[in-house]
Image 1 (tube, rainbow, N blue to C red):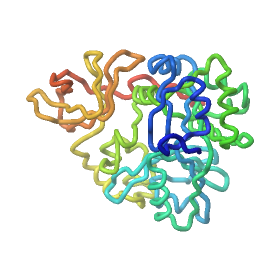
Image 2: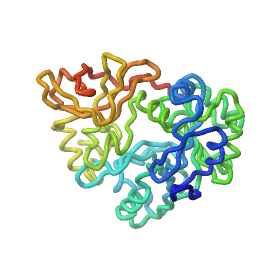
Image 3: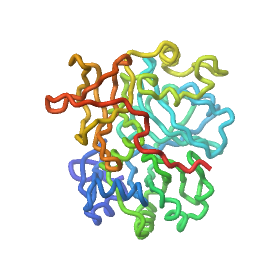
Image 4: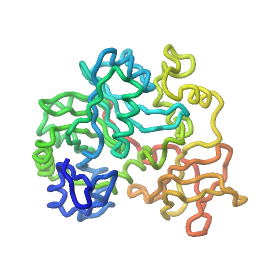
Length: 364
């Protein structure tokens, strides 16, 4: 990574973003493209219909090695490596002793190591916590770029460059030369995340962008795409003060680590998780839709029919795909009639099943 204006870091793809007319914003210490010339809505819809290329090199990529690798990681994360084949990937949570979410992670099992992708804002904090929980292991922050290619045309576009990726299904990873490729992403669409040496990133991005089906996509559309897919944003929809059960992420705890499982508990915050999974919580993260196409933003209060505050919106937008107002919000678990207070006016919203837009992962 290189330093830019105001000491912000720049990814290896920064020259490509400049050339393509990106508008930049500071994000987690990086100068990142928020959108390009065609704008957020066009980028969003292009990803849903063809393929979008995202620069996610700001994310932290960590190589984990050492004796007793799997047993040690199971003490730090609510995972179970038993029966987990080489090349498989899992979504997981790094919890504190209060059950709060320190970060959400993607973990890949390789032959003699594990790879973990952490959020940009939490790289140093996560590494420090993981090292303290697993002192026998080595956690190496890698200097590699990360490119996400997402959308229904992603496989066709990428397989022209790397034919072998067609054999991967959702949440599987493979090594192709100096590239580690996982069939995953954060848009709800089929696609790939491609880890490459920094010096190879620009060449690969230009190869992909030469395909008419592929366009560059900024952070703005990445956010609306993940929200349509009902996916959480760390620091907004969850943080150190929210638990896995409150955040509706109990599914991210391996079955064997849940109550009655073969490896019940044994991870930070397990006592809180087990108690809440049995007794429930006073609030829950849910999906909401509005009756009107009026954006309901992060931080908007939710009230009941008696104008009593009963919740808070954590993410919200007008869906480019459906033209409906969509939100993620924490609400009182006993509340039924809800209204979002937008510029002083209560607007009716309803609890909706997630995702807001169907996911289209390739699962076989």
